[in-house]
Length: 123
Image 1: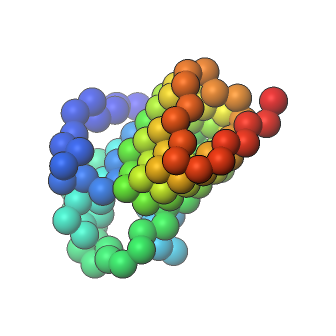
Image 2: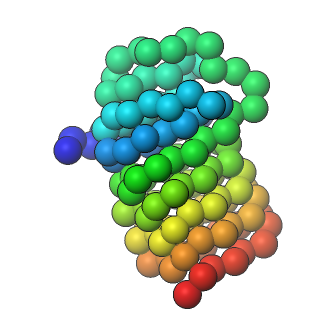
């Protein structure tokens, strides 16, 4: 499994690294890296859709290495690295840090938690 190490936070609204399924606004994608940039979905660097607009809902099935999103994020599994979300975060265990503009609901967190709303961690 290859992982994308660099990306531009200024142009990227959502970035998911790791193998798994990602549901974006009701459409499921699979790949090692999934990025939404300028309303375009890129899977492993290749454009697959150019009509993502409005409120973006990101649901991830599997264990991503890292997740960065301006939107709220739901992960059905554990995150093997960091989660950075402009909205709320709902996930299993997180080995890294969690930074959320909204509330955080998760399992154990290996690093720190910074939330703009409430924090609920299952132990």
